Length: 366
Image (cartoon, rainbow, N blue to C red):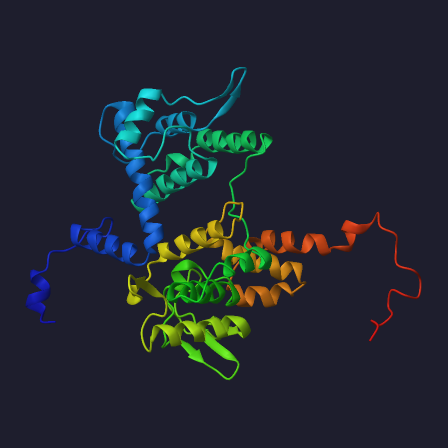
């Protein structure tokens, strides 16, 4: 670049970002986040904004004082009293939040929702370089004691129920031989059998990155939660074999899809439409679980947790399970894995009579 052009550029302050750079950073952060994450962040900040303006009578702006975060917790966390569970949010304010569509219904939010909204507020402060009120000693102690209070009442941050093989099969039994039924069967089996794929990963499956092999298919996961940069890694190739591969064959043959996204809308008259959005995977799980008459709190994540739980039940080595799921953290996957393996543990049968001597190592009868 010529020196005279460089001389004409205004110098930047290394301590701050100018407006153009700040806008670029925000754009990159948005683009690098999943659509689901971005939507949940927007909803949380929209709720914070509505609550703050109604509670304090002035516009929401960061940074928030620590006292406001404490007020938010006591406004939304239920506590035990002599007259039952109580929370501090005035009814009129709660009704106005519903009217403004900042929330869907009257009543205290779940513990999960409360913690998620605090997490989003904390993240917003950190990203903007503000002092973080969520890290204050009083807030951390209050949140810790709140979690403990909920736990003593038998409430903990909830997990969606796992779709292990039996409930999954019940859902698959509701998938008939219509085009929609073939699609849903292929999608559910693809997501589960390839290691419990996240819904964003399912809808990114294409004919091009899901190659036919002699045994079935090999899905190359080019981008995932644990591979945000899209680096090419051998462990990102996920096999789809057996019945899952057959279901995918049936869907591709019936739909006539030869390129592009595999899982698409089926419009009226069996017209193949646009690619499914990630939310559609959740909707399919919910619809099929309802049709199967399953009782429980299922979601798209139930396919992932179900795969891990089933692997634990069948004593699949943890390393092999994680190679399929792509979990980066052993701690994250162990809860589901142990839940599946618990019933198979010899320690769970210590009250049973031990096997007769000489028979425990005998080979099975032919």
